[in-house]
Each structure stands twice: as structure tokens, then as C-alpha cells.
Length: 233
Image (cartoon, rainbow, N blue to C red):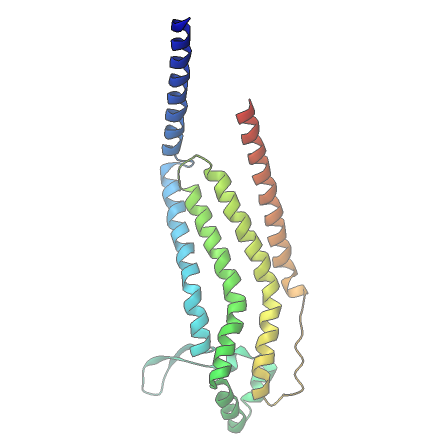
């Protein structure tokens, strides 16, 4: 009897060791071939760096609105704020019509409260975009990592990326409306400016983001069901 108990305990112990060793081996195996895994990790870093740049983009939108490289005047090339570029074409032509209207608008756009408002408005667009870049970057890093749950973790981050893409699509008309409301008082068209939202311009991106979210959610649910079934069997 004692020999039988010892054998059973030894069998259970050996089985646990085998299971543990198998998990350790799985954690060392890559989901993708080595070259593709390295590329995924590199591209993941690129997306993560793009996400990290977004706070600087928001600050720059307030400090130098509509900034573009400007070369001329014997001063070389400088990064010059051009807030009129943030206006629609018709309003921009009205502002540039005379030197008086142009100076009035530039003086209005240089106010500290307007600069802060421009940074906040830019955050409406940049924050969802940064979230999307961050999620895609982590998904690629997971795909380039060990095989254990790598695909499931990557899909989880891709689902978050598609949710951020949906949010970013919806933020576009809101961003344009807030920008028009903020800058219109400095233009000759004020107070006749009426913000307008064109849903057709965001329909394609929104539908693609929704399709991606639904597809990733279905794949994630399928993989989770397969894993649960494998553990049950």
C-alpha cells in the first residue's frame, strides 16, 4: 500500500514537472519566424514612438498653430506659425484680402487664451490617434514575442486599437467644428460663420474601424473558446 502511494505521488510530481517544462518551452518559442518576429518588434517600437510624440504635437499646436517651415527674408528657414492655414479656404481668402484683416486675425490668434484653446482642440484629434498608435505598437510587440498567448494578447490590443480608430473617426467632425468656433471671432465672416458636419466624409473610416473591431472581437472569442476546449479535453 505504501509503495502504491509513493508511486502515485511520484507520478503526480513527474507530471507537474513535465507540465512546467512544457510551459517553459512554450514561453521560449516564438509565434513567428525569427526574422518576422524581429520586424514586428521593430515596427512596434515605431508605432509606440509615434504615440509618444502626440503630447508634443498638442503643445506645438498651441505654441505655433498652423506651423510650417518658412524660408526667405534673408533669415534662412524658420518654423513659422501660420494660424490662417487652420481656416477653410473661403475664410482664409477673406482674412488675406487686406493687410488690416490679416493683422487682426493674427493678433486674435496670438492671444494666450486662444493658444490654449487651440492646444485643447488639437487634443480632441491627437489623443485618439495616439491611443490607436500605442495599441497597434503593443500588438506588434506581442506578435514578435513568445508563442504563449501571443496571438490572443495581440488581438486584444488590436481590438483596443480599432476602438480608438472608431473614436478618432468620430472626433474628426468635432475637431473641425471646435476649430471653426474658436477661430471665427477673429475673421471678417464673424458672426455669420456656422459650423457644419459632413457625415459622408467620416463614413468610410468609421465603417472600416467598426468592421475591424467586429472581426477582431470574433477572432478573439474563437481563440478563447478553442483554448478553453483544449484545457477541458
